[in-house]
Length: 188
Image (cartoon, rainbow, N blue to C red):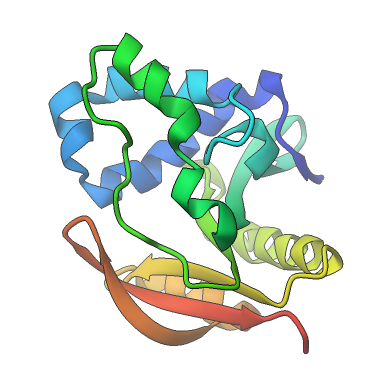
């Protein structure tokens, strides 16, 4: 079942999300440690308007277990999407004012910030199925362009994105990693 995340999903969402964070190798994660960052992100789930707030997370649930997550928002919200987390960061002794400093979306896009499948459910078609459901949800909202960034070396993810219809339109750095910027035309 594809649905919005709920409070009781938090402990299942976190390890799926951390697969992405681990690949990104962000300095703030190295300094603060994964346990502290996990506490911060989990507290952020409950912050309306935050990048990883429950209002921006959709999950694919199978037999009562969250098997995939999708996180996204309109590009027009990107500049303020992490502001709700600043107080939580400081409460946990992290001096940074956000975890992510790089601009990731282009004007006019609906940005797919994070997409991941739980390790036990990878390579079973769940990623493709989840992405297809997600595209329909965003299309029904009347959005025109869906975008995402994928590490240039992440061939399995690029395969899924290309399979469902995303096309590479450019590249950018997020942190120290180079990413392909891909778009899906929702008007077709």
